[in-house]
Length: 476
Image (cartoon, rainbow, N blue to C red; front, top):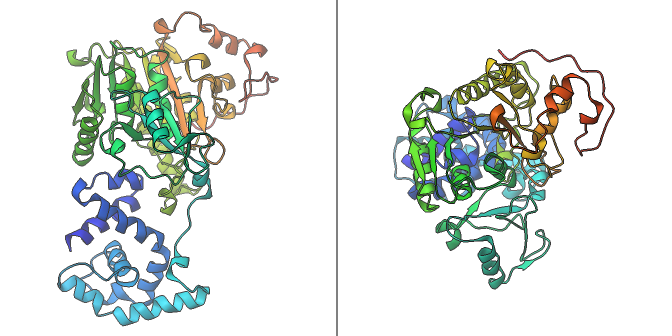
């Protein structure tokens, strides 16, 4: 029965918006993860129907032994849609079985009412935008090269072609170590994945590390990944650093920290020091971090950009309700706090701030408010110019959501359904004294004086200056 309690606990965390399905399941001990993931995902597919059945059968009202809605969901799922409840006899199991006939009757009534012949027709279908996202595989450069990976996949019968065609794959045009495969390609049990030679990672999720350490590997860099678990971005940073220098990987949650260490070991990350602590409690004046030169911030966010094959099953998508806006504001305040804390580190040269959100409240508005802080007003930090922030990516920030519309050119957005990625946002702050030679150091001055040549649209084309939209309410 512990298996069902654990699965119900995962559903509780998802209801509380404590992460994505994949992220929350990653906290389950590896020996139980596969079985738990299967039950959680299948239960979510049928959740609306199962809730209707439980309600009609008055299960929760009549059985006090069934202590929660989510525990009832996983047990009723296995009773109606699997091979029965896989647990020894006990009071909770018996409480469900006492209502078996009524539960089955209500389930069949729903099938008749909806005009379906099979139970599978009641399952929720996937987000159609997910079907437009290839299966991205990042070649782990700490183990081997992209060229070696390409040869290996060709030897398996794949061909370099359209990644949406069967047995085909392609090289990504922006991230050199990234390969694209058909969306339904599975790698979870592939020896290359189990050995840490390939990492399943969405393209947009590769942007933060790539931008932070561009244009070259910065082998001597001292880097902080402020919210590291489960470790995809951390291992990417390690690879870009050629496994040299020093990389501090912070994760405050004990279970997620264990997951982080497991992944880093599998990815053969030798230059990483995992830190089981909250980044915000770390003193920038600590001598241990005196040489930190780069900081990656990918803090908790709404996750509203995630449209992968799992998270469409969640019913927690934020809308425009008052409660949702309040939650966004709280997230944005926390995100701004992270940026301000990162700016206190004495030697930091670059700070990347990213989210998997599509909301301006968590993206452009946070950047806008960060530019108003003393750290930026005093001239210590500024937004990196476009040429340092993946300049070949055409979709930039939302100019209407910023005080200076041209700041949008320093920001990256990824749009689900249009860019073959999940929704994502990336920005980078640089210390003024470390803006590389050859970049436009006078861009901010041009904006202040209304230089029309500095105003471009999201495709890089020149556009006419327009009247600035009234700034939105400041973050609390």
